[in-house]
Length: 249
Image (cartoon, rainbow, N blue to C red; front, side, top):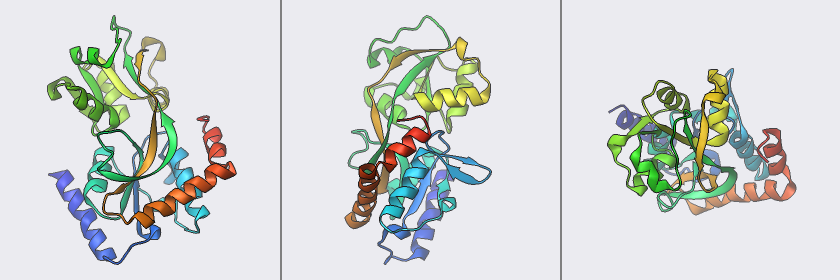
């Protein structure tokens, strides 16, 4: 019910904005707390994706205050960009299950999803092996959707609204395996004060890439405008500078 109300509020804001809004300036950008890609410190938006967005917008002559980027749990972001025109969520992993749902600009950065276990005798040789275990992941994240596509039963999934909550489930024995992005996972574990020596990575998935995912009704010209900005900062070397800043090059 809360998710339905949230979508209704966002949609109303779009209607107030006006149906004639058809430019990159009018896009409502949304993200989640997912360091080092996007996060908030003392009310300031920071991270790889934030810096890329700001630089790409500047490259095409668009000025936008990054404080206006809206931050919600990923499931809410995902609902909004699916159903509300002129919205964009980032950084969204571009996987086959999502390809036709959105319009894409990017890529921004690579992701490496890993299976993390609390040093149990668990061996994962291929994704099919995951069906034998209780797995925790962030709701509507790319690992969650990949697990569903694999045929994992919903009753064997422990879903959370954040990486921190999912890791807590692992810490307290409610799941056998956590699946999430490697950089974010270990950053969050350090912030939580977890003993990294008690955990191990038992499987690493193929590399995937994060993009800006626009609602499918967004005019192509709007998406193409941001793509031009991303291409420009990649060509100038600015994108690599951002990745190096966060040690993600």
